[in-house]
Length: 381
Ligand code: HEC
Ligand SMILES: [Cu+2]
Picture 1: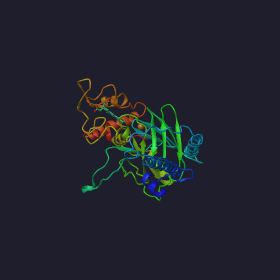
Picture 2: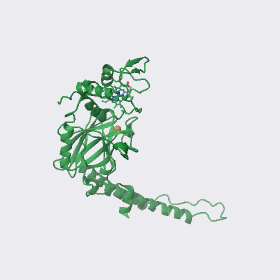
Picture 3: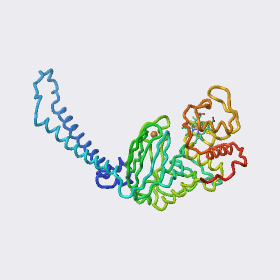
Picture 4: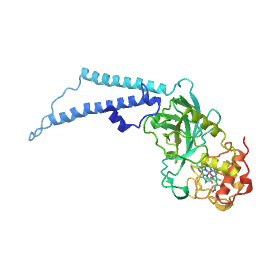
């Protein structure tokens, strides 16, 4: 009965917090049964008494009868008994909370920055997420090998974690409050500007041996695909208009694949030219707002944009060239594209001059105006 109800209410858990003693799932089910029990305990007598003491047919008006208004034994009982249940819930929950706070042994420390509207992990070797995926990708290869069918609109970063190894996330926000939420890991922690929060858990299922967890059908568009099992990550704190698109994919990898991912992601631009680096920058930092296929998003598309006169919000127009692009990246509010909100964060200090040249090369390429300079190998750092 318990397993049956649990199967309806919860996805299979995939971390030590879901599976261990004092686990989140156990407490969740305890509270669920407590609610069901108290519901029955209150509702059944209530309906029974309402029926039992109903006014008899044809009885007419009755004089009110004085009823007892005080019963010490009863009152102490209904205060103390629920209190005892609450004390159990408190210590059970507190124990679970501490398990999510105190890292076990040699935890893999991962820094995580949240911002409107994306996630950026930072690993021990300086690598960030090197993969972006579409969630719920239902495309299959059609003619010419091109993918056809339905998929989501947005790209989401992959956050890699090693299986069966304690991981510790140290989190901060670049702007407003967010919340790191992975339903099937049973973790959720708020993230603040000007303050760190942390949480720790042991991911369990890189081999997929713990049941149904292939939730996000992921397709990689950036180099270095490393396999693992994917789990949804959501922001659980309303943080502005694109809050609902602030998601990521947590990929649980075998420890050796995890090391491989860090190595590849630590040197993403190796062997790439400027336009290719621009495509990587786009996938990692700009794809949530700028499409490359002509579709309108929070920001204007980059397809066929280069070299055109671009209408400005204040009237008039500006040539879409190197200087306009650079200014739009470093100081987006300076000249707004007509019909678009002032929603772009400044990337000053976050993109190197060469990366900006990469973006310029990429936008040129998307407009069919590639120059030789765009094919120059990108200097490794
Ligand atoms: C949160 C959404 C968002 C993100 C992320 C974002 N942009 Fe923008 N961007 C916009 C919006 C909205 C505009 C139009 C308003 C404006 O001109 O600032 C814009 C305008 C631009 C323009 C001017 C284009 C035009 O048609 O006028 C460029 C160039 C640009 N962004 C580059 C980038 C690059 C490069 C990145 C990633 C490093 C990026 N943007 C990330 C929202 C975003
Ligand atoms: Cu958020």
